[in-house]
Length: 216
Picture 1 (cartoon, one colour):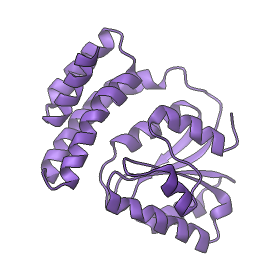
Picture 2 (tube, one colour):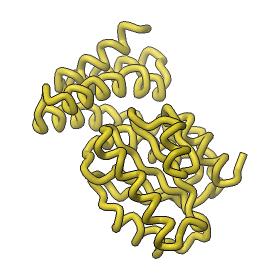
Picture 3 (cartoon, helix red, strand yellow):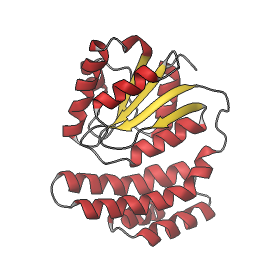
């Protein structure tokens, strides 16, 4: 089983777009759960790419090709990930990648999983300015909003702290529950900036999201 995960990760690392799709098809056909394909294979490869990019060992065109390899594989996996989701409305969610960051794989997966579990998800995309997030919170009609922000780099992670300050200054803290994720994000960081939760993977994100929104 571990061989297929390594092959999936390698396909992403080597920017092998067709290979990522074919390995994903093979894994699904052999009964590997879609979530395992993502978390134990594709995401592992994308983390390697992210680390290399942050260390200056890769350039933007390479990371975009790796992202395309994973995105194409994700197109096959989304229907599987959505099966068995809770159809009840769990709440309204604003999902985004912090300003200065273009790593959206983890954020996309979390958004997909939240959508499959009853959340109405508005995805703002990558490199989103904090001012835009504040605007979206203010115009949201829901009484309670779940904010899901991600950052893969330590530099972009710092904007999560700035965002929490802005949320308090703009008087909308009572309207939002704030969940942040990404490789450098820890529970200690969440405590420091005054946010509400974090999760290590997409499956856990659903559990944390429902808990902080007052669900099960």
